[in-house]
Image 1: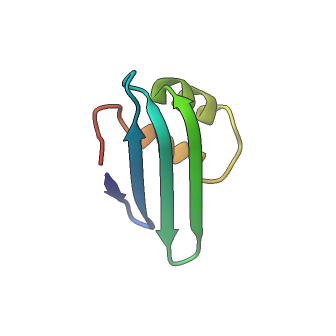
Image 2: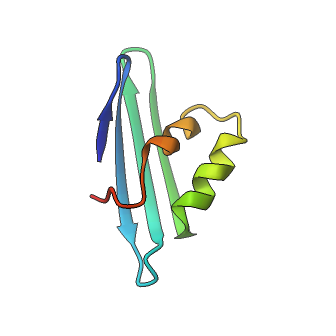
Length: 73
């Protein structure tokens, strides 16, 4: 899935496991002033990761709110 906003392009790539959870999530954020690459590997429930991301002060984690469980690539 790709999301474009005024300043950045966001690309999410997910690999789903047999339980319907995400086994790998790659997030790429690129713009004129920054680039962030993040890879999460494990048995990930996207709703839980999104809730955790809301409470963290890590650049780029707020972009996980834009990814919905049904948006897969």
